Length: 433
Ligand code: SF4
Ligand code: SF4
Image 1 (cartoon, rainbow, N blue to C red):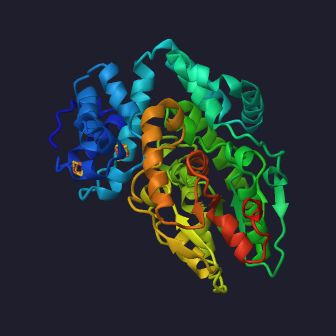
Image 2: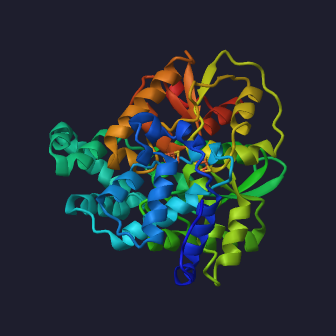
């Protein structure tokens, strides 16, 4: 794509990077076929190619981020299916990240949108606030339908719908400290505790720590780590995201320097995609660029790390698993084979739902901010998953678990919960009913 940025514009390193991304696009439109919003809405401006034109126009011509541009950029799920499809290597992720920050800096959203976004940014990244909000949601649930009918309050109604009925007590797995290897030591890793996941489903990191220590891996929960920053990063709140990134980099570099780390293990693929990008996010910060690149190189999804341990084959189980590959897993991190191989090796029969490349509509806070598109994508995803006639669903991202669980009666678990069970742990509580 030809661009006409001025030298003054290109002096901004963010603009210079976006320009080099734009120049790679050859307008072929292959990406439109796999874009969930184009497939759902059929509007070119809701396709990757259409958004690329809007972003180019906004950045190059100094066009204000008006309602039209913001509407189409907001509808993007950041699922990154377009990056998997693009034959020209267009880094849409970094382009749309820049566009979101630009919009956040220059566009004044309507009051109701600012209120919803500020609430999400002030609550979700902080486990104690999120836990409190979920408790409050139990009281508010009877009013959910009413709130959904009042347009300015609709997002709050959707939040009440998504809030789980049962809230687990705080888990020991989230407490800082070292969990010793339970067999001959073969490795040492740090684990990301995260923000929403330990509140919504502490069983995931509990299963991970049990499995890893049983396999001889020492697991450290470093003091000071927290939310990876992805939730606010996707809302264009760059500074808030970078504060989270720097805090985590400090915590993990300290853990690495104190006792060595083979990996930083991450059990939510949405967080993994962001942490693997810390090196890029902090590239312009001289105090953090090198440390952040080191952290990104150490970051591994739990299934990547488990693959390196060469686990023994287990006896076949009489259980069929529909494997839902989260967008952040397959498109963000390009991990497509490892989780299914691990499950097969552990004795499960694995089935791939049709249209596996399409997002389930969760996408961080997307299911709250864009409830209609999200609901359409969820219904399509659930239909494809249920068509597999599998006994259970497995996936590697808490957002997908929460989203899909509200649309089907099939039990849905994190892949590592099944692997923990297959390698000597207890049967997951969800399957004991
Ligand atoms: S990230 Fe997903 S929703 Fe956004 S343009 Fe790419 S394919 Fe479409
Ligand atoms: S597939 Fe790639 S090169 Fe083709 S229009 Fe989409 S982003 Fe541009």
